[in-house]
Image 1 (cartoon, rainbow, N blue to C red):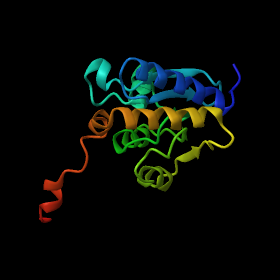
Image 2 (cartoon, one colour):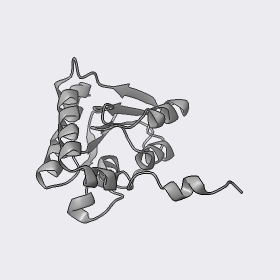
Image 3 (tube, rainbow, N blue to C red):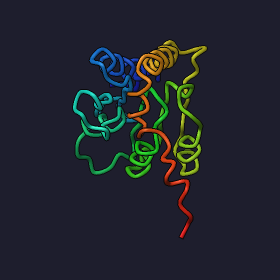
Length: 170
C-alpha cells in the first residue's frame, strides 16, 4: 500500500467528523497512519455526546482504535482541528513525529502547535486555499460552534476556571 497524499487522509478524518456532527456530537475526526505503508492504523471521532466521555476527542479515538503498539514512532496523526492540550500531550507522550491539521482557524491560539514543534514534532497545517478537505473542516467546525456554543465550550473543558486565576502561587 502506498502512502496517499495528505488530502486523502484528511478527507477520511473529515468524514468521521461529519459522522459525529450528524449524530449531534462535536465534529472532530482523527486518523493515525503508518508512515511507511500508508495503512490507517486507527480512526475515530469525538465521542463526548455519543459515549458521554469528555476524554474521547478525535485524536484519542484514533489512538484507541489503533490499540496496543510497541510504539508510534513512525506514524502521522491527521486531525480535523488543531489538537487541544490533552490530545497534544498524548501525541507527545507516544512520540508521534508528525501531525497534519485541517483547521487552525477555530482554535483559540497557536499554543499547542508551538508546544509540539518545540518538541521536534513536524506540524503541517493544510491550507484552505488549496485543500478542499481543510476548507470543509473549517466550515463544519464553524457551523458547529455557532449552532451549539455550549457544547463547544463543554468539549474544551468548560472555559477558563477563574478560581485558578485568583489563587496565589505557593
